[in-house]
Image (cartoon, rainbow, N blue to C red; front, top):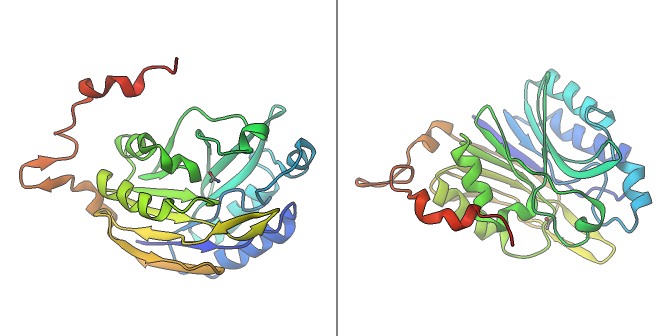
Length: 256
Ligand code: ACM
């Protein structure tokens, strides 16, 4: 199967431009799965709730309808970050789109000013072996572990990365869970925030198959998804069988 990303530079608050730009990639890319950045249609660095309200969309809505049409036309899975409005609440969400299938993940670990504008989500999403998480979720290893335990063989990871840690961290997340990952970051600057690019595709042994630079670009790699089913680390160590959840209870205790 062929998996890829479009590392693009969205324009802040310019949905039509951003959606058209993403569609021009989806219409041409030779892939089975394509990942777009976090908040790809809206941009990221909101300064007020009014700005969020201006670009936030219900799901389904304008952007997801356009993506669904493209997904159906091209027979391609699209995972993309969406600024979501639901019942007067706002979420930093990502959608999984496969023709008629439209599922939503709401980012659980909100970063910096996102906490001013968005509600956090509460559950991870896996559809047809593809797990979805958004940007800063990578910093919490429980995110990728949960997706793997829920059946993900590939993690699709829309991002707007600012800190430098994610590329190496995601290689480790893939290694320690034996899952493929596609991180799609954005590039450019918004209101003093500089996005690091370096989107990447990682195999289920933690090898970086491709890492982008800091310009807009499209990349695709061929992977064998079933390789993620091999959880042996050595001939006598198996990632699933050797786990000891009873020893990790503190991880799932509620915050004080
Ligand atoms: C981030 O979560 N956008 C850094």
